Length: 193
Image 1 (tube, one colour):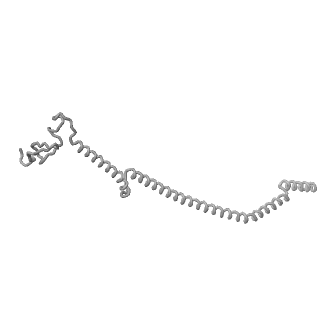
Image 2 (cartoon, one colour; image 1 turned 90 degrees about the vertical axis):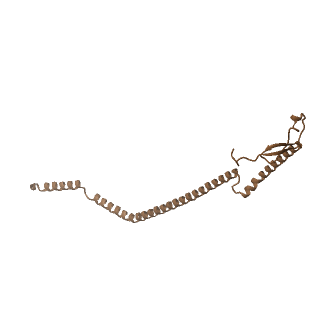
Image 3 (tube, one colour; image 1 turned 180 degrees about the horizontal axis):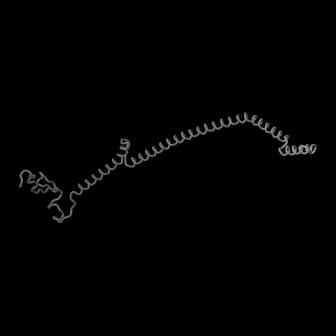
């Protein structure tokens, strides 16, 4: 056996609740028991309630302590919620959901702002395009006003040319007139032929 590794073994007096003292060997300095061979119903043959009052009292005491602890725990989360911003799991989950909802709302607002800016930019481009087309239409109208008298002059000249053509004999008429003149001339001077 190795030295100095074992606990000390004493002769101890074990005391029972009934008052009986037993001398036994133990490593503990003193022992107190609730029941012994002198008071146990199996050995005595009598059934008596020994120390029942103490057991009941201990049970009631433990029950009261548990109830008090339960009440404190019920009140404690309320205090923790006030003290601890994170709170319980349900509250953490609720806060996470609220944070996600707030983030989604923020993104939706940013998207709406971007869409509004894009719509305004498109409206501005459309307005500029409409203004540019209107200016082009005005320029064409002014050019048409300037070209209208010139076109009328060209038409007037064309009508004069046509009238002149209508008054001028056609090539066939000229040929027929020439042949008629030559025929009349030959008829007058048959010798020239």
